[in-house]
Amino acid sequence: MARTVKARSRPVVMTVVGARPQFVKAAPLSRALRRRVREVLVHTGQHYDHEMSQAFFDQLGIPAPDRHLGIGSSSHGRMTGRMLEALEATVLEVRPDMVVVLGDTNSTLAGALAAAKLGIPVAHVEAGLRSFDDRMPEEINRRLTDHVSSLLFCPTPTAVRNLREEGIRRGVHRVGDVMMDAVVRNLRRAHGLRPAMKDAAPGSYYLATLHRQENVDDPARLATLVGALERLPHPVLLPLHPRTRDRLHRMSLQPGGNVRLRPPVAYLEMLLLEAGARAIFTDSGGVQKEAFILGTPCVTLRATTEWVETLRGGANRLAGTEPARILAAARAIERRRPQSRAGRLYGRGRASEAIATLVARFLHGRRGRGPAA
Ligand code: UD1
Ligand code: UDP
View 1 (cartoon, rainbow, N blue to C red):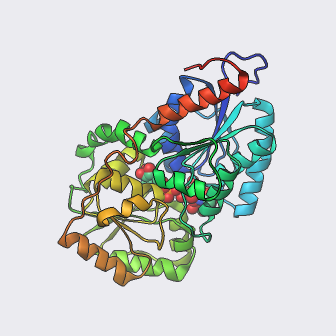
View 2 (cartoon, protein in one colour):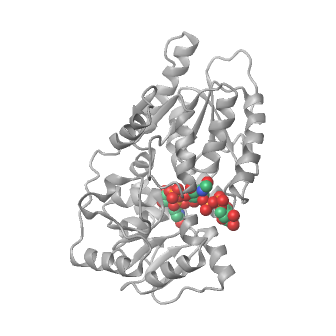
View 3 (cartoon, protein in one colour):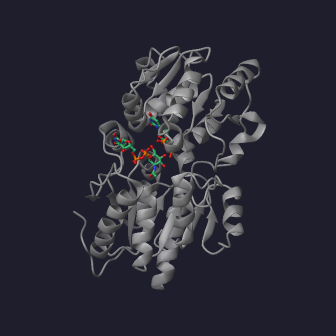
């Protein structure tokens, strides 16, 4: 149970998480924040299956949530509305000095709105990302969250520029990327798993993930995408997101050909699969970025990406959902493997430290005290 503290020695920061990519981001961030402030971790419950949630807490040593709101799986309005109501009550009880939200899910938007309406400053991690495609629910979440945030932590110069073009200049910091921190921290651990993953010899398979609403909720589009993956020239390991599992089940569609269905895997296994794949086929934001960091060629099953830097030199190709384009992208990679040049683009794995320092400085500035770090 989180405690309400009246006279407190350290500022209190409430971090809101709820979905798989937020657990990956929270792992390094929580560690860095807790060295400087008192963190109250709130899990909305958006993702709740063991392999979508608890597996990440266990493997990445994320502190157990102080609150679990148990809100998941409904329409956007209902989910966001129920989270908003529950998060408002939690903010009123915990009385944090700041609320930290990550990424672009419904949990992100609900956390930001609940805090902003109560006059509590919001810090947004992964601010400034834009796909410029308003049909993506995430694009709406990103824009709205950025516009109510006091601290905006951008991973890249492009993100800073996007914010400037929307008139947001104050509180903007380019800090690098917290998912880079997670890769730097965990890649060696992941390689230690190699002997246990015998069916995934490096270079023998493609890796695929598929979960975007606009891809998998349209039965015709999902069937087309699965059809393209089935025809790729090497085995395609497809750890299945529960949304996609549910949609395939409803359509009675059982992928065949070269596709090998798997349950969702935990983070270290995923890093290892990404590092050893001939190429990755995905509609995930985080997986595109990890492919770029790890130097694995990526084909993105969307028409747009918010991670535009990954497109450099053909390291990531936007193939959309047309089988001919997806198969042509695979052939191009087989002919000449593109080099990804992530270099220092996402920082050196210290974004979380930079964010925690800036949060502590902001909060002590508001209290008129010296820095806590
Ligand atoms: C959400 C995020 C998306 C993010 C993704 C990460 C929003 C709008 N979308 O999409 O940005 O990329 O998480 O994975 O916030 N389900 C389960 N068990 C779970 C979780 C989900 O069975 O533990 C199934 C349910 O049928 C649910 C469906 O997946 O209705 C969709 O879940 P939801 O959280 O609404 O969206 P995601 O597709 O996971
Ligand atoms: N991931 C994982 N296991 C999986 C699929 C993804 O650990 O089976 C990790 C992946 O490595 C990345 C994050 O989950 O760190 C990305 O989450 P997801 O693709 O669900 O969401 P997005 O990034 O598109 O919002």
